[in-house]
Image (cartoon, rainbow, N blue to C red; front, side, top):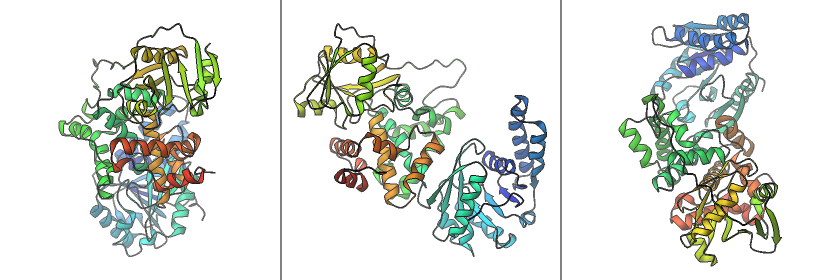
Length: 506
């Protein structure tokens, strides 16, 4: 199906930040855009907001004034619904209320031509439910932009039960023409991003609840070891805890209280206290001018005379770390063994989802220090470790000293299953696997959605494959055993991949 030609008028209903941003995107691609908002003066204010944002680019020499003037001429504020009659695509971006949206679509069906496509920018409501009261629900499709719409690449094209395939493909092609990276999703709670992303927040919130370490250290680990652009606490402060908590609660309820989506009491307390993040001046962090930068839990410089790193068996995902240590002057000796690193008194291994204390007892290895996952061990600036209760102070010192030799800051956190990055990535991959299993989207679209929509360093399914076909399943199985909770049950597809000895893409 071809994209809408540029002489097709576009209409956007709702002139807030999202609506005006969508109008800007369409106008930048050459369309005439009708911008309507029932609030007096809101449509013109939305147009002026576009002008204000783009004038900054003009002032910096990144956009010609003539181009801005032409774009603004194509955004036409209107106040009468009858003026929407010529639009070939109408995108609503009004309040997230199903009754308000259904009422709007009933009005649009009476005004627009039968060929016009009607789209909803909803981030949480069922496209199927929105179309249920329509005379022609096949013309309704989700076109979920991410905020700010002019800058964020992702658009989730969401098909309701009645959505025409031609309509979905036309909107998909149009989004590409508008410079976006669209993905196709079926209308299930959270679509792709708001479903698959829940563990990114949930696992760090749980670690904070369990007093593994503080929020600033967890954020630093997610960035500096995990390769994510922002940590979950600074991100939820930015989003607003009222908004983020409401989305989590909505997804939790939509999936009949599946514990995988369980909201956090830590975040609920912030909402109840009115500490909503940046917009209220306080969330996990303070946002006043005199606010002090939080201190990170970083191990002090450790001293050791040891220089020899012994690698017993395959280093697996830790191989790049071993190479980095070699490049920083460590003598590396390789010999047969169970897949672990020996340095001084420390026995180091990559976490497999068990607590270090539990694993040390089961493996009869008292001085066990578990290393967290890193997206790229050659570039990581910080790494979390956790030590078995049985481990000696010297073993902990030697583990810190080893990593510090490679200029890696060490955060020694309390002994919790899966440490930080590993458990987060495992749960992201698990949820992505179930989304694929349930027919929400294709493998490629799920990974693309998480990268383009949330700037993840890698799609969770590809990341899972890169770690090895069985590691994520093992981590989740061990975490489920440690916690005794259904929350960490491995996806059926991860279990199948383990026994088939294959990944999602192989």
